[in-house]
Amino acid sequence: MDRESTSSPGLYRAYAMLGLVMVLWAGNAIVGRAVRFDVPPVTFSFGRWLLASVLLLPWSVPAVRRDWAVARKHWRPILALGVLGIALFNSLLYTGLHHSTASNAMLIQASVPAFVLAFDRAIFGQRARPLQILAVVVAILGVAVIVFQGDLGRALRLAFSRGDLILVASAIVWSLYTVLLRLRPPVSPITVIALTFAVATLALAPFAAWEWRSGQEVHWGPGVFGAFAYVALMASLSAYFLFNAAAARTGPVVAGQAITLLPLFGAVLSALLLGEVLHLYHLWGMALIVVGIALGAFAAARGRPESPSGAMPAARLEDAP
Image 1: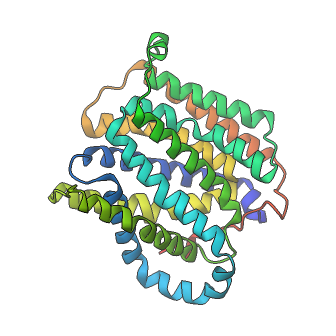
Image 2 (image 1 turned 90 degrees about the vertical axis):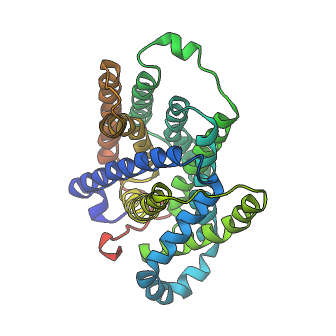
């Protein structure tokens, strides 16, 4: 990591970026759930990345041409990032939202930080500090308070379905993507985003075509058009630029832990947009999540810069459109 990446101002800006990403992705989950009867899940994912790729073309074409020689040498990590974090994760997420409850989905998403710690240790040999582990435990406890509405009996009665298993798979895939961002090639952020989006679009095309041939249709209307616009512009282009840039500054563990903010923002957005009531258990859960994130940030600020072999190049926001 560079000097700015490990300085307090650089880290604080990265934490703010991660917070904004989670707001955008909380909206993505709400939108994905809302159109589940109107758009097949893989078709929704395919349309999302196709539209995002087309919108990015004015900036991505010159960037990819400039970086092509380097990007071609690093085609394996680009392929892995595109297939895992873009194509597979989102398809599993949208499919899981067809079959699972929102409460179970939030609980499963909270497992991402633990998976990130495990993958970071297994693949790159990065040993988590005790404070990082404590931060993950506290944040997950806050999520559990929200999901179970402060009632231990709900936890004991929790049942898992096929949709929940799909969501577990999506959490594992996203965790692996977050850790593998260490292998991102030394090219501009636009090049990485454009190539991984293109990989995802090509990978999803045959599966979307299978959905169409099997009789699953898109029920077009203003809401569906708006959903595609949101997931392409906000949950894809904006969010992925911000997440990748923030992960380059904080490292994968802190970036992965940020996903525990999703149920917090999901509860707030549901109250604002859907008229749902915020209860006392929401406030207690939110407080624990914030404490967990703060502990993770403190652990990152105290940590030493990562070794050259494990460091990720810092993305520059000025390269984004």
